Amino acid sequence: MKPSMIKLMMIFYFGLSLFGCSQLLYYPTDIMYVNPVRLKSKYENHEISLANGVRVQGWYFQSPIPQPKGVILFFHGNGQNRSAHYMSLFWIVKEGYDLAVFDYPGYGISDGIPTPQSTVEMGKAAIQYVHNMNPRLPLIVYGQSLGGNIAMRSVFEMKEKVKPQVLVVESSFLSYRAAARGILASSIWTWPLQPLAYLLLSDEWAIHDHVSELDEIPMIVIHSKQDKVISFSLGEEVYNKSRSKKEFLIRENGGHNETFVGKDGPTNKIQFLSILDRLTSTSQTETLLKVR
Image 1: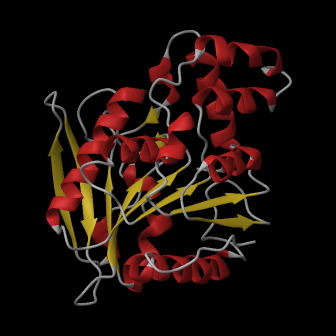
Image 2: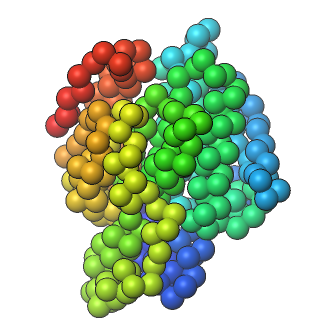
């Protein structure tokens, strides 16, 4: 989906959510966009049953190397479903990491309805499920856009049970209210509605200030200065409020969720892998530096 369409969609749905329809933060479809069968990569279908009986569907892609470096659990954005998003990280399978991606309730062929609470419940279950598959394999939780907030909150809820070795947050934010206000401010038609974001939209299931309590989990924050959907300032807030050992991969070019595509994609992949390989192998002894 083009960034301009994402922006228009989020303006519309955030505007509607201000009037009590928080489920309209989400734009799920049941279309199969990129069938993994076409990729000729080894993968498995997985299903997780949540506490309320809702069943969510996912894929697990196995790295071709005998001993993977870790497994990345990917939380995708608010539109479409996993089949439209997983390709942004599929390249990392060839680099020695397994990749797991699950849909939120109501996305793709998963049961249920997406809400701030149900997406976090799914996130908690997915963290436990992937960890149980191979407890000795380093777990990296990666959240993109809306999925970044869901990933952070899910990790916060699970930190006493399963502690990921690394948390990656790309193009995301801490507060639904702040994100809504920023999106509403980007259009002259919705600019006057900004104050309603704080009055009528709840942050009950956002990570918000709880991000400071994830101080034992190293974090990589990725954001573009050219992001027209989720402003760079919101990514800076994620980085600044985190008390973790952390790195900030600041992108000078490219738009929303475009870290690994375009002219800077190859360079960003190399830089990201360098950080990730180091954190998953020797994070307990390394001093992390801010990347610019």
